[in-house]
Structures are given as C-alpha cells and as structure tokens.
Length: 389
Image 1 (cartoon, rainbow, N blue to C red):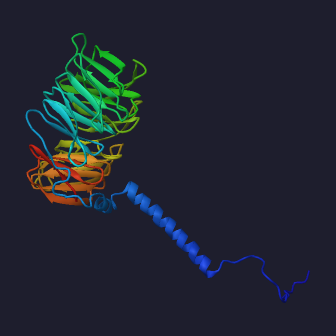
Image 2 (cartoon, helix red, strand yellow):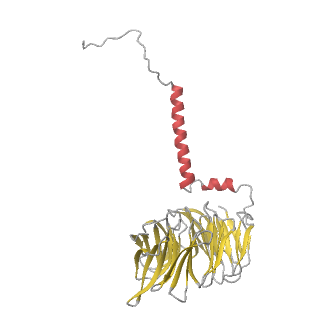
Image 3 (cartoon, rainbow, N blue to C red):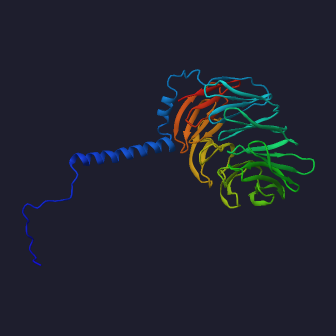
C-alpha cells in the first residue's frame, strides 16, 4: 500500500451532519430538560419556590380573614394539624376546621387533659389521665372511638390510622394495646414487671414500642422495649441510660427517637443505637418530630449570650444546623421542611438548615403551628390566625 495520500475528486460524505438550526434545537431541548428537572427539585425538595406557590395558592383571598378561627377556651385545650388543617380539643369536644376556617366536624367527648396527635391524614385525640380516645380522618370523619379500661398514660398514632395506647391496670403495672384503623384490637401486652410511661407505633403498625421506668442506685434507669405486633414476644430491648424518658416516636418504619431529660437517643427497632445528642449544659425546653427527616430541639443554655439554642438533628442524632435565638421562646413547631419559633416578641420561620424564611411581630399569640407550605396558624387564647408570608 502506498504511503501517499491521494485526494479524490468529487468525493461525497454520505453521513448527514446536523445543521446549525438543528444544533440550536438540541441545545435548547437540553436546557429545557435541565430547567424542568431543577424546577421539579425545587418544588418537591426545597422551600425556594414556596413563596411563588403561596402567591398563586392564596391569590384572591383576604389574608386578614382567610383561615381565621374563633373558639371557646375553657379548661384543658390542645391544638394539632392534620393534613394542614387545624384541630382543637377542649374539655367537651374535638373540632376539625377546613382550610378557610369553617368547621368540618365536631365530636363531643370528655377530655380532662386533652392531647392531640396527627399523622398523615389521620388525627388522634385522647385524654391523659382519663379514658376517652377518638380517631378521625383529615375531614373530621370519625373512624372509631373507645373508652379505655384504665386511665390513659400515653397514646400514639400511625400513618395507617392504627393507634397504640398505654393504660393503667389493677392486675399489672401497665397495659399496652394496639388498635387498627377501624378500632379492632390487634395487640395487647400486660406488663407485670416493668412500669411503662411512653409508647409509639411504626407507620405501618408492624412494631410498637414502649419505654420502661426503672431505678439504678438512686437514679432513674430507662429502657425501650420493641414488640412485633404479630407476636407477644419482646423483639428488642434497648438501654436508654440513667434518665427519665419524656417521649418516644418512630421517625420511619425502623428508626426511633427517645426524648430524655439528659439526651435524645436514636436507635433502630432491632436494638442498634444510631447515636444520641446531649447538650453541653442547659436543658431541653421543647422538641418536635414534625420535620421531614429531622428532629427539632430547643435548649436553654442559661448563658448570657445566645441563651436559647435551636437545632435540627438527622436520624442518627447528628446536628444538621444550629442557631441562637435572642428572645425567650413560647412555642416550637416543625412540619415538612419548616421550623417555626414563637417568642413574646416575634414569630420566626426557618427551613431545616435554619435559614430564616419569614418573620412577623407577635400579636398576642401563645402557640404556633407551622404548615407544610410555610404558612402558620398563630393561636391566642380564643382565636387562631392563619399567617401567610
């Protein structure tokens, strides 16, 4: 073969090459796909576009009156959100309100010390130290209600609408029960050797957990027992240290968080400790499990500068973000990607990284409930205002 290169006259290239206009169309298509994907990310996993969504969602409504609620406040009162709708339990009844503030449903019931919990599209109302318990859906329709055999210590709600309830008993130290979403009894365990003070149910009600009260020397010694609701045997038992446990919650199907007087302990249903968070001095003031994939905690450090510390923690107890607050907090709330703190001076709304998203002066409010879109119910003694940033 000759090593020379010869030019072939009138040779043609049979491969079609894109014209300049075709290249621009391809480039614009790629840009459009990137913009759409980025927009979907912002809409689903970020608060960046929530201001735009709120603008369109609440355009045309009177922001001074939309969602406003007046209620009678006497005795013990508790507030909760279910699918962004406000529910209020008083001594005499449970009321669920629509987005615009109108009444969806009222259910009479005796609540000497009312407590509410929302999970998904279900709402639980129960009487701490009493016997009444009721479950509704987000529209306020009653799923079931019951009168417990003994006084209620604690109760928990799953996303499926199932309920766990911890009660006293004359024959043992405590009774732990699980009911399905229609009120059928699924699980019962009589605790003959341990005092139980808090309970929690996994989202699909496969597991139920309870914390035990013990004593080691002169200090409290706590543990958590996890049960498979299809069996009466202890599935796992986890030591929670020498502290009193205030609350217990499933963060997902297999991860739990126990809130103690000294530390927050994160562990799995099969007994593995994932981590814990203990503040360096100070004490826990408030906490919330409402965040999507994070737990919110508020501490009083008793220091002159930056006395109040707000933190978000992931499901292993690692700090995601922390910020100091200037004013003494009155109320803490978290929902999806938002965290709200109400002080006697102002309302502050943050994202999970604790970057401030909005603020407003306090108008005699005492409680805040942040909603999934960054709006918030601000509650005074006998009225609730929907604050739309």
